[in-house]
Image (cartoon, rainbow over all chains, first blue to last red):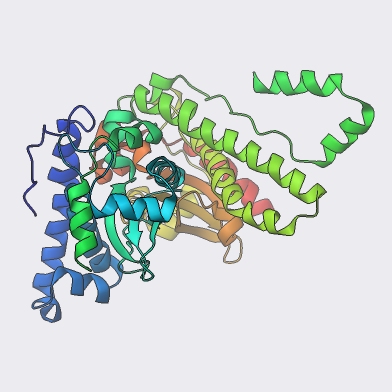
Length: 193
Length: 228
């Protein structure tokens, strides 16, 4: 289980300490525990990296590996006092691909709030260099679906927001915009995953 | 309330419009619960029941009605592309409406017999198929817990094999439309169905919910399915 890059209370009031206690401390942790158990039981997994396991497995093992990967990405996509408009290469890329930041923000928010069922909303860089907003179901992600290089993500499983926002996913997404870690997005732009 | 409103507006319209309305989908409305929000406590909290019914189910209905209205328009314009595009929203929101409408009736307060399986055809079939009620509960719980993401666990009637079966559906896929199996008892394992009370511990929820299962309703569905 990765160490959070900030204290559990550091994302409040947008995402509460209580949510982190469960989301990181129970959900994410459980995916790690179950993945480790699967690795212990299967020699062929033992010298593979998380990425390799995720790309080559299916069923329960895939589910656990992908969710570990996704949650690692999610915690890094957030930072205390993050949010606001981006700066650096990502800002230019967003203007290029969406016209302006507000259009991108609307697009991302629509995909995130309109997603049916559990899943994730992502900003990705596709092969042609253009940025796109995509949604994935349950444990899936742009890596395994070959949708592009992920830059930032928002978890829209209900456990990500139910404690703080109940059924109101749009309110959670509005809060998420106050935490988005543009440094992480810039770092991802610079390195192809 | 919504029913009264639509009746009033229909009365104001011409005969021709009335005829058209009868040919088209009736506006879906939120069914009332057969019990109060708090009546399933301590097994399902009043807070969960209120949000689940008045927000989640209500939203499926609102969105279903909007999709069906758009469908009517697309049909009138013979816009096949839009008709096809709308199918996802109809399946999701329509499925949500169907599933939750079954779910509220599948539950009953312990004071009204919730949790009690009396002698009858359902009990016979459960014992013959699963061995005992306890074994059915274990199997249905396990299947429901194992669902990745959001979905439903079902006790169903298989008309082909003329027997009970356990099934799962993902997201809001409606059981009968997608598999032909007749839904008898649904266990909603979307996180909104249990999170406020059980948090991440889905297995506790799928165990405790049996205390408020309305087996009378389940039996009625079985009898109807066996006849059809």
